[in-house]
Image (cartoon, rainbow over all chains, first blue to last red; front, side, top):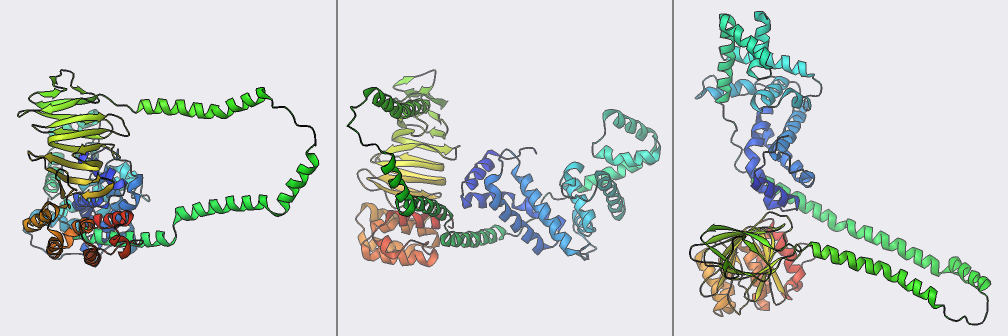
Length: 169
Length: 406
C-alpha cells in the first residue's frame, strides 16, 4: 500500500493515536468526501451512505492506535468503508430498487452516475472498485472473496459493455 | 491473434495490464483492422466519459458534527463504564489482595506455627561466635554490586541523552551565535542566539521539532538533553513546531515556564516586555510559582513582567471581552470585570471562564462553576467545593473534559 499521507496527515494521525479527538475530527473532515463517495457509490442511498461513513469513522477511531502511519490512511479508511458497505448490501438482498427515474440530465456524468447506481449490487461493486476507485483484481479479491480473479475480470468486461450500450457508444 | 481475441484483450490494453510484446501486437492489429479500431475507440470514449465524472460527491455538511456528537456519547459511555469498573485499579487490588493473603497466611496459624517449631528444633544453643569479616565483606560487595552496576548504567544512559549542539539554519541575513557569525551553525549549551533586523533562522530541536526564529530575537540554550531541553527566550518572536508526539522542550519567559505539550505555538515578546503566547495547534502548559495551567489551540495568553500570566482567551474572541480580561489581569478590574466577562462569555469561551476561576473571589467561583456546568458538566470527581478551593487536579481534569469537546 503506497503511503499517500501528507506530513500534516501524519501529524494528525500521531495526535489521534495519543487520544486527541480534535485531531481525529480534523482527519475525518479531510477524508469525509472520499469516504462518503465510495460509500454512496457502493450503497446508493443517501442515509445509508451516511451511516456507513459514520461507522467507518467509528471503526477508525477504535483502531487508530494500532494503525501503521507508514501505510496510506485514506486507503485504510476506504477499505473499512468498502467492507462496511458490502456487508450492508449483503443484508439488503440481491439488488436495491432502481433509484432516480430521471431521463433528462443537466450533465452527462449525472447520467453515468445514475446508470452505475442502478447496476445490480455485485456488478456495481466490481465496477466502482475497479474503474472508479482504481483497485486491481488482486486487491478486489479481498473484498469479493467468493469470486475468482478471472470471474471478476469477465464480469467487469460484461458490465462495461452493458454501460457502453446504455450510453449508446 | 484474431479479432475476437483482440476484442477481449482490448480491455486489458486500456487497463495497461499487457506486456510490451502483447501491446505491440494489438497496436499493429488496430492499425490494419477497422472493426477492432472502432471497438477500441468506443472503449476509449467510455473511459474519457468516466474521467469527466466528479472524483468525489458532496457529503452532508453536518456529518462531522454528527460524528463528533456520536463519538462524544460513545466516549462518555465508555468513561462511565471505566468509572464503575476501573481496570487498573481492579488489577492493582487483586495483586495487593494476593500479596496480603500470602503475608497473612505466613504470619498466622499453621504456617507460623510450623516455622516457629522448626526453628526451635533446628537451632543449636552454643557460645557466641566471633564475627567473620571475610564473609561479611563478600556479602557487602554482593549487596553493593547491583547498586554500582545500576549507577554506571544510569550514568551511561544519562550521558547518551545529551544532544548538544543543535543545528541552526539561517533563512535570511546573519544569525549571531554567542556574538559571532558561525559557518558551522551549531548552537551549544549556554550560548546565545541573536537575529537582527534582517535575519531569520530555524533551530532543529532533536527528537522534538523545530523553532522558527523571527527578526530581532534573542535566545539562550540552557540545556540540550533529550529529556529536558530548555531555552531562555528574552526578546522577539519564535514559533515552535513539533514533529514528535512527546516533545521535551521548556521555554523560560520572564518568570514563567512554558512547557511544550505537542502542537504548534508562537511566543512573542514585544518592546514593553509583554509576552504573547498563541497556540495554533495542540496545547501547552504554563507554570509560574508552582501554579500550572493549560492553553488550548486557538487561544492566546498574555504574560506581563512581574505579574501572573493572564487569563487565556480565544484568538477570535470579541474585542470587548479581550479588553475586559486585560482590565481584570492588569488594571485591578476585580469582581466587576469578572461579572462582565461572565455575561459576555459564550459556549466557546468556557475554557476562558475556567481560567478565570483562580483569579476570582470565592463567591464568583461558584457562579463560574454553575455557568460552565451548564455547558460542560464537570466530570466525575470534580466538585463545587473542590473548584472553589482551587483544587489543581480538579481544575485540570475539567479542563481536559472541556478541551476535547469544545
